[in-house]
Structures are given as C-alpha cells and as structure tokens.
Length: 522
Image (cartoon, rainbow, N blue to C red; front, top):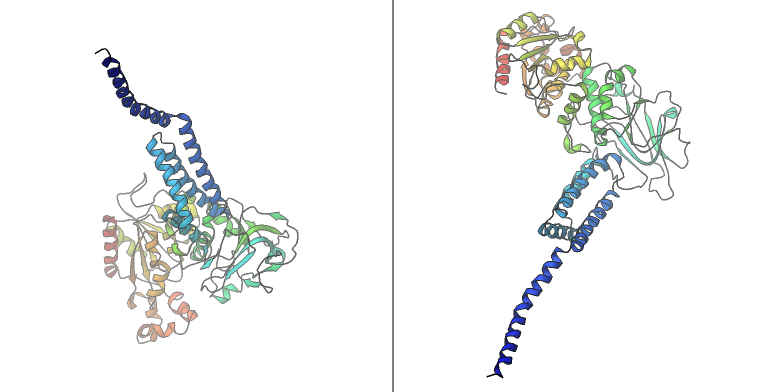
C-alpha cells in the first residue's frame, strides 16, 4: 500500500505537467504579440516602405505644374496608408503591411488600378494640342503642332533661350540629343490662324535648335508661355476672351500659377484691363518682350496658345482635364463675383433681374423702350446697359452676375454671359440673313458648358431695317445663302454692319415668357 503512493504522485505530476504545456505556450505567444519592440519594428518597416514609394514616384516628376498636382495625389495615398499602419490595432497593422506587400507584388507583375488612374491623370496633364509631351524625361525636345485649325503651338524642353531682339526661341543642343539637323519652325502666337489679314499683324516667332547660344540675362525657374496681344485683342470683348484669355487658361492653368507669361505685340491697355485675371493665372508679373534686349532662359517654353473653339474648353484636350466651369470659377474669384448660381448671395432679388444689352450703330434695337415696357410687364426688373456701362470690367461683371437673364442682339456684348450665374438664361436675338448657325456657334453652343440656359429669337423680314434698303424680291430676302456664298465681307456688309432691328413685341413676348418660366423652374 505504501509502495503505491509514490507511484500515484508521479502519475499526478505527469498529468499536471501535460496540462501546463499549452498554458505556457499560450503565454509565450501572447507576450510576443504584446512586445513593444515587435510593434515598433512593424511600424518602422511600414513607414519606411511608404517613404520609399513616395520618393520613388516623386523622382519621376520633373515638370513643376504637373509635379505639384501629382505630388498631392501621391501624398494623399501615402497619408491613407500611414493611417492604416498607425491605427493602433494588430489587425490594422497586418492589413496595412499586407496591402503594401500586395502593392509591391502588383508593381512587379502588373500595374494596379490605382496606379492606372494616376497615370491616366498625369497623361492628361501632359497632353498638349494632340501632342503627347513627356514631362518626365530630361531630353532636349521640340514638339510642334501645325495641324490645328485655330492655332499653331510649339513646346520646347531643355536649355531654352528666348531672344526678343530677334523674335526667336531656341533650344541649346546637347551631345546626345535626337533633334533633327534642320529643326527650324516659325509661328505667329495668336489663336486665330485662319484669318490671314489679322495674322499678318502678329509678329512671327522663329523656333529652332542651336549648338551655342547667348548668355542668359534672366533666368526663369518656371515654364514660360509666349503669346501675342495683337490682332483683335483690346478692340473687341469677344476676341479678348476667345482669342487670348481662354486659350491662355487652357495652355497654362495646370501650372497653378507657377508659370511666366512673355508677351509680344504688347498691348498695355489690354494687359491693364485684365491684370486681375492674369494675376490669378500666373504668380509673376507679365513681361513685355517688345524692345527687351535681355536673353530669357527657362527649362520649358510654350510658344503659342492652345484653342478649341469660340468660348469653349474641351476637357479631353486640356493638360489637366479642366473645363469652362474651372475658368468661370477663376473669373468669380478674380472679380469677386458673389453668385455661383441663381439665388445665392445676400442681395438675392425675388423679382428676376433682366439685363438688356444695347448696341449703337449696327444691329441696334430701335424700339428699345417698347421692349423694356413689355419686359417689365411680364415681371422682370430691367437693367439697360450700353457700351459706356461695360467699360469697367469688375463693376459690370458684378452687374451681370446679379442677373437671372441676359438679352441682346448678336454681338460682342453677349460675351458678358461668361459672368452669369449658373441656371441663368441667355436670350440671343439673331438678325435677318440666315445667321442662325453662326450665332449659335459663337454664343449658343458655349452656354451648356457654362451651366447657362439658352433661348434664341430669329428676326423676321419685317423686323429688319433691310426692308427699307432692298426690294422684297431681292436675294437678301429670297435667297440669303447667295450672299453667304460671296464670302465673309459680303455677309458683314449686308447682314451685320447695315442692319438695325425693330422687334415685333407681340411675337417676341413668347420668348420672354419662356425666360420667366426658366427662372421659376430653377
């Protein structure tokens, strides 16, 4: 009996030992998981991977404008991953580490969807008038596009020298560049190249490559844009925007102000009028190239401005996929316009304000008092503006921005629609002469991208002063297209320059009623 007791104790000790093994193993694992050194190593490893990826992608960005925007996207992705890495729980840490490993694996095998989206965005920024300009390479390159109907453009990368005294922009050759021996071009940096008489007034710029260049007089640490304020600039409000300001926005906006404007055919009055807008596009004072003897140097130069259509921006053809909405936002910011859309702002008017744009001379509205009386009777508060009232840009833009409807006969004054708030209505009165397509092209078509509603009214034969100048059976009335076939000068002389309009208010009433319905349905 006494001999069995030690045996029982041994058996009990063995059983106890077997039961302790799982507990000790569990304790060891738990200690490893809670080890602060282990957690610290995980965080350091994760952050190091993040920093490496950011640095690796950042080195691909050379162009300042593109680099700034791409850098923001990269930083955003890094911050998101960092938040996951430092979330405080083991599951989050493992998930973040797994994501980084998976991303690295994907980069070694195939591009993941996030990188595809980022690369697509960068490619859109680098797209210049159907020429893909690779800003990620340091090669010495000249890329020119002479295929566009509205404008010619050249983009130069490398050691660029702008020589105002000889109206030339040259690229200094390097020992290993691939430029052709006869790399020489010429263009006139104004966005209306199909109008030969106007383009002859624009100073041509020679573009080429040289083995040795003059010493730099001014160094620009940012890209430069060379363009002209000649032609129609300063003479016509429509052309100020369609030929210069909008093309300049298309060409330079993706640099977000980090760009220098160099102007030839310098129009001091034009520059002064639009200084507040120009200052929102560039962080630097514009430079007058006329008479400047200095040699300007930069790593990148755009010569000429990209242009899509009249008062139109095609997002698919811009370097940054931006649109007319972005341009209008820039105008609102530049000119301190209060309303983005109808109904916004402290001074919102319950009675809709209608702005009647009046012309003097050609296409003048001869019964304006009758039209104003009808408009007021239908419930509008009427504001009448002639050429004198439009001279102060900022002040008049504020007036336009306060209105729900803008109305006028086809002409440059309708360009002020660009300051209207969204959901406002433009009413275009189209003169007699088969001009509907042309008038729509200038002012009707652009309204959709501006968020503006569009109505039109075609003048009848009896509403035109031409009935006093030509017999009723004249081709001017029976076959207006025959005048069109004679060319632009004939169209201008007959239908645009010699015509005034007396509206049939009974017939016109329906258009005003539709404008009121448009306001009420906003």
